[in-house]
Every structure is written in C-alpha cells, then in structure tokens.
Length: 570
Image 1 (cartoon, rainbow, N blue to C red):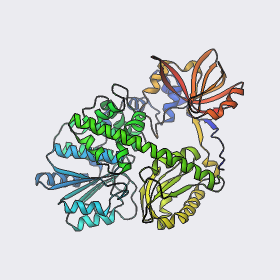
Image 2 (cartoon, one colour; image 1 turned 60 degrees about the vertical axis):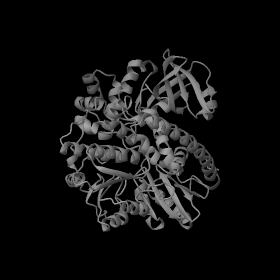
Image 3 (cartoon, rainbow, N blue to C red; image 1 turned 90 degrees about the vertical axis):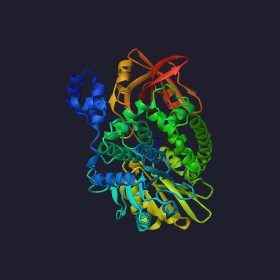
Image 4 (cartoon, rainbow, N blue to C red; image 1 turned 45 degrees about the vertical axis):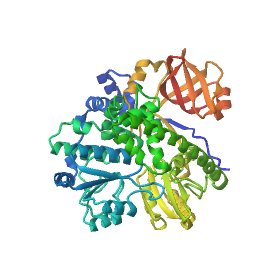
C-alpha cells in the first residue's frame, strides 16, 4: 500500500514587514492585506494601484515581437490578394479560443479564412501530417498556427515544400531547431523580443489581433472585443495569473459577464451562471470543461462552432451538446481515476517511486491528463498516464508538481518517446507500448536526480496570520479585489492559531469536515472538503490551528463568511 504522510507541513511566509507597514499606510488597508501584496512582489503604491486596476494601457506593444512586422505584412498581403488563410489550432480550450479569436478578427478584415483543428484521438497533440496534408489539398496559401507549431519542424517543412507560407503563434517551449517558418511569434523562443513569456496561446493570438488593429487603423475595440474569449482560454490553460495574463483575465471576465458572443452566452446559461460573478473558478470548473469535453471524446470542432456562431438558437443547441458530453467525460474520468489510484496503491512505494507512470489499454486518451492531475493532487508526485491503442502506440499526458520542470525532464527521456511537447507544468507525448517500462524507470531516475523525498510532501503555506475578528466583510472585499486568482497570484491563504470548538465538529456530505470555531469571543464557520479523515484528531484537540481561504457561503438565502480549510494542525 502507498502510505504517504499527510500534508501537515504548515508554515507562514516571511515578508518585509517595514515595506508592508509603509504600504498599509499609503493605501489605508489592513496590515495583513499589505503583507499579502508584498509577498506578490508589489512594494510600492503605484505597483499596487496598477495591480488593483488593470487597464488596456498596461499591455505591451505587440510589435515588440521581432517577427510581428513580417507576420502582419504577410497576413495583409493575403487579405488584399484574396489568398486562402487557414488557422491550425490545438484541440484544448486554449487552442479553441485562439482559433476563434484570430478567425473572427481576420474575417472582420475581409479575409478568406478557415480553420483546422486535429482530432485528439486519431492525430494526437500538435500539428499532424494528416492535418497539414488536408490543408495543402484544400488550397491554402497561408497557414497560421495557434497554440501549437513550435515543435513541428517536419510538418512545417511539408507545408513549405507545397509553396504555403507558415506563421507560427505558440507559447510552448521550443524543442531543438526551430521550424523554418515565415514568421515565429513565441515569447519562449530566444530573441523573440517580447518581454512577457508567460502568455497562453490565446494571449499570443490576441497580440496578433492587437497588431493587426494598429496597422489597419482600427480602434482598440477591434481586439479588446475578444478579451472574453481570451480570458476563458488563459484561465483554462492554468498559466501564471500575473502580468498581461492577469490584465487579460481581469478585463475579460468583466466582459464575459455581459458577453455579446452567442456561444459564450449560451454556455453560461446552460451552466446556470447567468448574472453571477465569473472568475477563474467558474471558468476552470464549469465553462472550460464543457468546451474541452467534445475534444477529449473526439472532434473538437463543435466547441469552435459554438464560439463562432452568431445564431443564438444554434448556440443553445451546441451548448446543450457540450454539457452532455461533459457528463460523459466525467463518468469516464471517474472510472479511470479509480483504476489509476488502485494501480498506484498496488505497485508503488513512496520511498522508491518519485514519479508515477501508468499505461493501460482500456483508457481514453482524451481524459488521461485530467486523471494525471488527480494523481498529482493525491500523491504529490509528477504523474504521466498513457492510453495504449491496438497498434501498440500510447498517447500520454503528464502533470507536474511545484519545482519540477516536466518538459525538461522529458528531454532527458527523449530517445524513448516518439514525440512530445509542453511546458513546466504539463505535457503531452506519444510512445511505443514496449517503451513504457523503460520510460518509467528513466523518468523516475530523472525525478530522483533533482528532488528529495521531502520535496514530494505537499506543503501548506499561509500568507499571513490573522485573528477571526480581522475577518470582516471589508477585509473579504479587499481579498476579492485581488482576483482573478491562479498560479503566481493564488487565492490568499490565511492562518489562525489557538482556535477552539464552539460546537462539536461533524462530518457532512461524503467526507467533509464541518466546524464552528471560536477565538477571543469571535465565531466563524469552517469547512474542510475531503478532510473527514481528520475528524477524530480535530474533535479531541483542545486547541488547533487552521490554514484556510476566506469565502462567502450562501444558504437559505443568507450569505455569511466562512473558512475553507486547506490544512489542520493539532
């Protein structure tokens, strides 16, 4: 049995308290909020105001990309000469929104423009020979990749040989020699010229639209009207929620709540979110999975059609289809998750297996990434899952933990893989079935070479210590104004110590710990999802400490603040 220590390594982060005190005075905010800002690298009044009030003026000039002038010149020539442009997009939410943003913008400019999105099950990750052959046969003159292409040297050589120019827009790490494209817009390419390396694929597509608007004399509305789509793709791709990504999502979520895109509007309604505040949680857990679902189960084009259509009735039908597909995906996900957990419990030893690699014949290749994330969450180890087809080829997806760069690790296993691509936190790959065993050994060795057993125990780190009496509605509103949250700008984690029970704790739902805690006369409700196994420890404790996020809970029409518990220390 895989017995892992509980994630009880709780600590409170250190910060420059003099800087925090100065900021608290200048902004007239509580010291706890000021410390959280300092921990996010915001040390001056101006930096903090910029953080709290994102604006389109905060975007960099898109022409900082060295190849942007070439790309814009080639696109405008194609439009003027009525050449056929095809956008090649990836099949995830980032790729789908990238495709729609660029396609809509080019059609506004009068382009003859279509798209191609690969089938996840038959073509796999990135550009495929099948895809580029079809694009060539269909008479394309210019191919623009979005959210893919930087590792497709062979496929792009095929396109070039057919006399078709290629513009790459991507945000993934380059691998080896760059493809011989007409222009390359990827901030991770050395010498790209662009200062913001963390953009999602849809962020690069948006920068291309920004440049097109500037060069053609359009108003900012030409490209900012796509911020709702860009926010969905950015949040779904789980890129750092800092810099331009934070500006895109902050402004985009505001547009999303009044979106004019019929597909987005229909999907929001189908998920029961109309009129509600929308941020990374709603997008990541309710909207994005529906857009992703059809692609995970096969053809992603329905997601693209949803976001492209201007017909509200058609949009409602597709939104219903996507919601149904997501229910199907979740059922497959649940079954695979149980199998994966059982395999780890039977075959893995926490002192020996630093990385988890599993391959099964009956698994669905469109869901392996989701289950890999669940393995990382449960066992706090890099995890890669493969779905093996009847030709002996396995398609895989991996997820990582903090401090371990997954793409770099795959470079050290390259000779065992047929293809791969990705970044620090996630990657996709293909491998021959016979190589899965040797890959498991090599990958585990790579993880061991750069991580200790202590690194593989989850840490719960609080931003600041507070008392219950600090947790007022005003304090909560200041925390909420720090949204959107995500990597690089996580939801603030608070720490309260020496708490006592107001009433006996209890188990609610399937395995959730429900408490009412008190300290210094102040009282607050707390809930720890999936922390029911701590019930006996907590019940016996005379005093205990909690790490939590502060959230609103509405029940029977009444809204109160409550602690959402992340860790317990007794």
